[in-house]
Image (cartoon, rainbow, N blue to C red; front, side, top):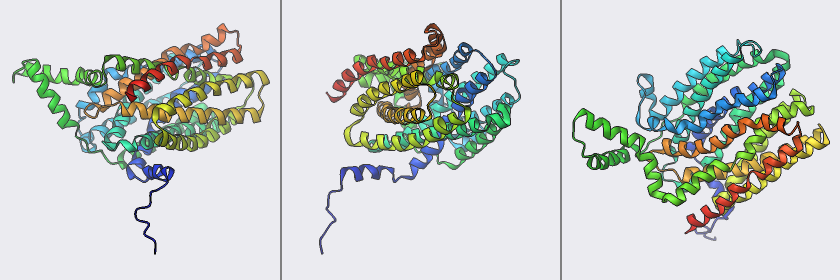
Length: 450
């Protein structure tokens, strides 16, 4: 009998072994919670406002509420250091924050379902801002949860990133499909009532997952002792408060620059800001484009939501396996080029008109490129994040990406208007927006290899 105990496994099979881990199920469930608020204040709200006759410039401008994702790093350090009281203490640091913020979003969604965009647009905007703020904050805790539960197992970073993305798209696409598929029959107010029920299910998910073990407190204590000596702070209340504040606010960002060096750190931050701007411009106007070009809500639900969700799952898992096999930076570069090329598919639709087979082809190409690049992007951010302040550091990186995708992309409607509704030219311009990020990626890749 042959002894196969020392047989070398095929590299692709070894890469797939990374998915045999219960922790990835927890990451998937919380990923669903992370993606769902984008349905409430993203595609659903865009469809609701468009069907209500709100001008596309106003629809695009309302997306500025997503700017809170760009500044959530300002309060992210608090989520690494403050344990919420009551039942949240029993849930743990990460789950306590997630559960509390989900409860606030649930209440806001119930109120949102009772509004009329034509008469309550200002109140609707305030509620959208509240949901965006809660979502941006609970994303800090969810991202930190993923980093904490994976711990020092760096080989599982791409797999954890992929499962998180699959969860995000599941939480975004499936409810989005249900919304658009039933919007004409039950009305958007009815849709939002069902969205509140889904939020309740997501809160159950938060109770099911396990709180991660982490050496966070020990690492933070080391930083606290170091700053206590640097600040010459004694045991007085003011001295202890000064040390706590310095460790909470300064150390997460100081450690990132200290670990990477100033030049590389700045290049990383600029790359994160620029990389997905073109994709964001496309995403902000996609629903408006679909409706203006002539696609129905049912077609949007079927292709953009349901089919897009299935494709994203397959392509994300494929992309993560390729990144495990060949490396994150190389995967990012390929994904960036493909992502820009996929935007040209939408320019083709703008010229050809609402052909259903062309819509399907564009969705396939777009989801492949977006999934491939996103899993590498999230893996890179996770890999660059320290363990003592995982919430704050990941939020710093992710918020910079959101800054490009939200603040600049919120003017996407004005850009379409400035182009006199020339959608083809609009999508060509979004394809060109990836070039600066790719140039920076070449520099970052060389520095990381060195």
